[in-house]
Amino acid sequence: MEKKGKVRIPDYKRAQKPAKCANCGGVGVYRVTYEDMYSKLTVTLCKECEKLEYGQLKLQSYFDWSGPGEEKSK
View 1: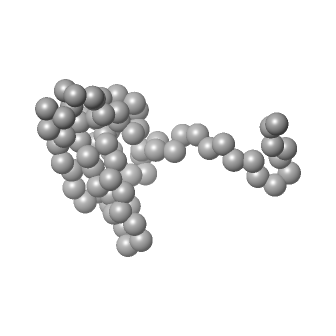
View 2 (view 1 turned 135 degrees about the vertical axis):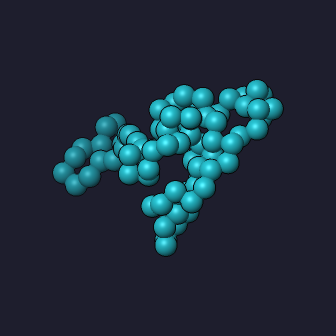
């Protein structure tokens, strides 16, 4: 996915309830849009994380999925 744009979150909205960065959990400052030919993704990122490309972000750090051969916990 390619970075298509970013928009700064206005200060008055950040003062109400600070948004969290989807990558590191810090204070979100930008809404960054990534897009490819199949989908479009808009995420909230902090100042440091907005400089990263899509492949460098850790947006899905935890999966709770039991695949074939694994027992589900009761």
